[in-house]
Image 1 (cartoon, rainbow, N blue to C red):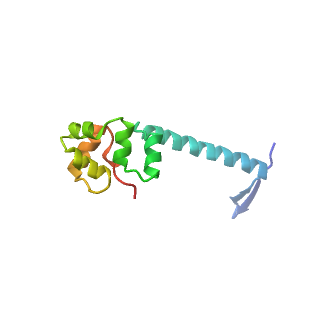
Image 2: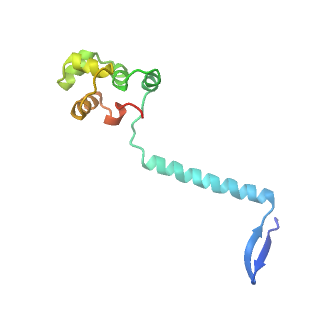
Image 3: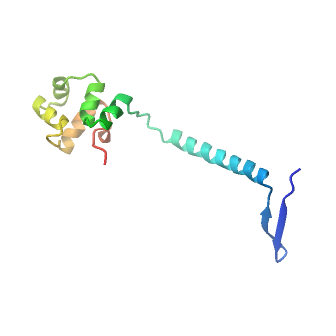
Length: 124
């Protein structure tokens, strides 16, 4: 049995002094409970969207997210343009970073690629 020392002030417990081994066990249990709660919250808030490794790698290598997603989905520029009703040169310019697409344009591209809009926006 582990002995806990109680320090009183005005006749009431004010501090508890516990041996280090007991403290470590209690601390580990609290951390495990916090981890379990954080995991449960993450699972509850999971939208199921994942960013593939190839897209992350391309983004890190300076390739625009639009191009990375298009290539990941194995679409040609023409196929993406056709799916959005945009011209191929316009999509190419956005993809190459030469033009910035309007909000409406970016929404069309995101919808055609099946990704959330923020998946196409550059990282801050």
